[in-house]
Image (cartoon, rainbow, N blue to C red; front, side, top):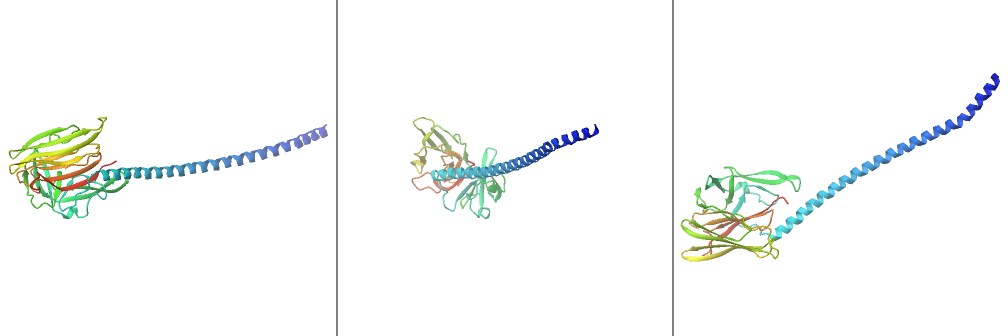
Length: 291
């Protein structure tokens, strides 16, 4: 009986050995497959990370290229800086390349608003770096006046003197409709005429013309300041009217860009005008916004 039981146990052991070996082999194969799957997932995750980095680099490059294309287009469509000794600046942030090197070394006059009056003061100009969202680095330059918040800064004009200057309220600093604005300065009558033309659909400005009218030495003068025959995205705007050079006739500070996100600040002085003119442009500074 015992011998029979021994043979039975041996028989069952012999039968069990192949199954155990097969199970062990299957387990090892499964473990190898799991390891391979883990490695494959790691490679896929690494490839996805590399693809995302490449996508971000491409998007940043395309973003900058788009900005540059817009910048170049607007640069072709707007007046360049006026090259001369006289300069005008706004106290704001400029992009790299829009300013010149010796700004802080020049003697500046700032036009300051004090209550309802405007005052000219000598001032130093301070330039500091600022962050540029387009290039994502600190290449922008912020211009400020040492004497406080100046509306505009001017240099190269020997005829300027400190003190209060006569000014006229700017009723139509920006308008998308035609208008005629009469005003008086030192008792004399002058007019600004803005003629805004619509395109066929009436949705965009088909062009804009600014004309100054007045008299000088008993002679009536009509002078076109700027005229855009091509469509513009914004009409020209009048920033300031007054007697900066104190000759008794109005001077003007205007934005002649005709384009959104572009500023072309221009200074017109009556004391520099020819005999058949009311004013002459003596300074112009172009700058671009964030586009």
